[in-house]
Length: 365
Ligand code: ADP
Ligand code: MG
Image (cartoon, rainbow, N blue to C red; front, side, top):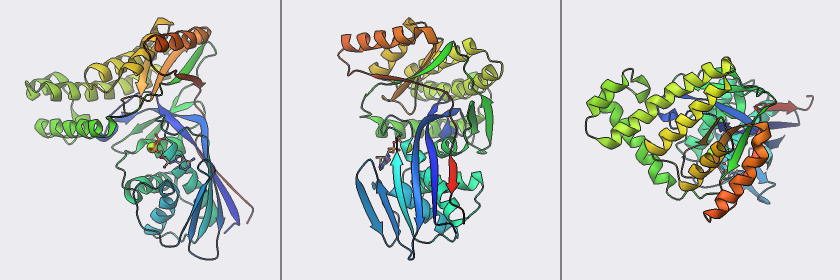
C-alpha cells in the first residue's frame, strides 16, 4: 500500500440521447474541464473520514452503512461498495475538492464517486478494471445512497478520453470512443439556464413508468427493442401520451446512432440538425423542456447556431449550442437580452471541448 493517492475525475455533458438510458438505449457524453479531486490517505483503523473543501465540512464514520441524503455518501459509499465486493479496503481519510458546479446537471456526483474510486484503487493497489470502477462508483449512488440513477454518469467521468465523445450502450455497457474534435471555426457553448428543477422528480418517475408500460404493451423488453416505429405507434392506439413518449425514445435512440455517423464523417451540419430534432422531440413529445431552455435554443438558432438542445433530464439545467466561433459573442449578448426581456434570471455561457476522463496518481510505494 502507498501512503497517499489522488483520484481526479471530471463532470460530463451528454451531447445527445436523452431519457434513452432507462430504455436500454444509447447515450453520447463528453467529459468537461471541471474536475473533482479526492486525496486518500490510509489510516491505522477501519474508519472513514470525508472532508469537502466546498462545504467546509467533514465527517468521521466508524460504521459504514447505507444512508440517504448525505453529501459524504458519494465518497464513503465507494468504500462501502468495494468492501461489499470483498476488496481489502482499510480505513481511509478522504479530502474532496471539486470544481464541478452543483445542480447544473453536469454530474458533480459521479465526478466525486469516480475520483474516489480512482484514489482508493491506487491507495490499496486493488488493480480494478475500468468496468469494475464504473460499477462500484454507480453502486455508491444506487445502493449506498439509494438514488436510482442510470449507468451514464460514472462511465462518462471515468472512461471519456480527450477529443472523443463516448458512445455507451446502456444495455451491454459497452463503450465506444467517437471522435469529437471541433474545428477552430466551431464552438460548443454550454448555457446554464439557472432554472430550478421544481417538478423534476415526479415528472421523471412518470416518464419512466410510461416507457415501461409502453414496452409491456408492445411485448418488448425495453423501448430500445422497437424496430418498426409506425407499427408500434399503431398498436399503442389512442393513448396519446404513450404514443408520444415512445416516439421520443425510439427516434432519440436512432438520432444517437445517426449523430455518431455524422461525427465520424465530420459532418457538423448534420450533427446540428440532429441536435435540433432532439430538442423538438423533448419539447413536443417528451414534454420535458421549460420556457427558459426553449428560449436559449431559440436565441442560439437566431445567432446562427448549427444546432442547439437541452441536455440532461429536463425542466431546466443546461442547453448546448453548436455555433460558428465568430457568432459566440453575438449569441451571448442576444441571450442576455432575450432572457431579460422575458424576466428570466441571467444565464451563464461557457464553452467546452471533449476533455480527458479520470486519472489516478499515486505516491511511490
Ligand atoms: P449533479 O450530479 O447533476 O451535479 P446530484 O444531485 O446528482 O447533481 O449531485 C449533487 C450532490 O453531490 C450535492 O447535493 C452534494 O451532496 C454532492 N456534492 C457535489 N459536489 C460536492 C462537493 N464539492 N462537496 C460535497 N458534496 C458535493
Ligand atoms: Mg448526479
